[in-house]
Image (cartoon, rainbow, N blue to C red; front, side):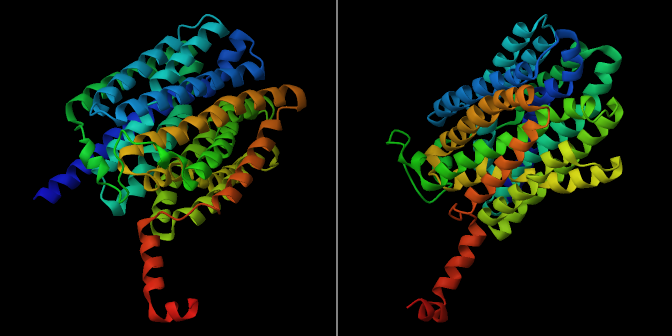
Length: 420
């Protein structure tokens, strides 16, 4: 009976955190889907478009690290999560009240501050409630699947028609309302895990007041590099693809919506499939293969001369690889770090990844588009994903099943004789 209640709460928490992170990315990515309408009113350059995303990425990174480190030492993760969901929903509504580039920039900075702690806190809550065999799936479902459904499927499918019919300001207003409702549900049903429970999740044990040496581990360093590179690829598509498809590829708004929705559907399937595969086959090779597959997506967006149906198929297949994001942003950092440092490990990887991939890269890609042509961000995205795949090959394996198989092989008498 106790096990049944645990699994019931695990599934319920999974659904709630799925919705919280999904709405967070829905609000975050809304500006990119609405950009053709915003640019028409504010006459923005590509550099300014990149700066809007960079400002949010920088404030997201700083907030995620500072607040994530703060709650690592305290049992108040539920309160922070609820406050963050309420805040980013209100700042989404505020974005719709912008009267200039500068006021929109301020609204995005404030949204980044609110959204920063949501992912690391959600993953820490989910880790405490997860059975070990489902850890990779649960963390991927929270992050990649929710991002795909809310950010990449529902985002273009709902926001672009709303902006076409009612204006982009109304679209921002409507985008913020669901989060306020969800905050009430989170406050009512999410349980606060004790620090002792989190400390028992992994074999290595450190006290929260000890020197944070686990944050300098081999795997965390490589995950940070992968995050910086792969997030560059991710944002090359999510930031620049809608405008590129509309202006340079000359697709109408309905076709652009279709292509972005296909990308979103692929992210949904990949977000469930890739982390689950990594539970069985291992994190390292799954991550490398998925990153290499994703590298083809920006090339298809920019250069593939094909019919719309063929583009849909190609984008769907290649973007499945984006489901690897929770592996390097959360699963490997968590499995490579003691329970006392899990929140900070995830926040560190996400934070530094956001500083480069979500802040510096959009500005550089926007500047490159202004200087070298609109397709430049997609070339950068391709190169970044290939580099991420190469670095992933040097990560040390952390998946429990893969480690178990390795331990069994090494314990076999025949294996011992071979290595002797």
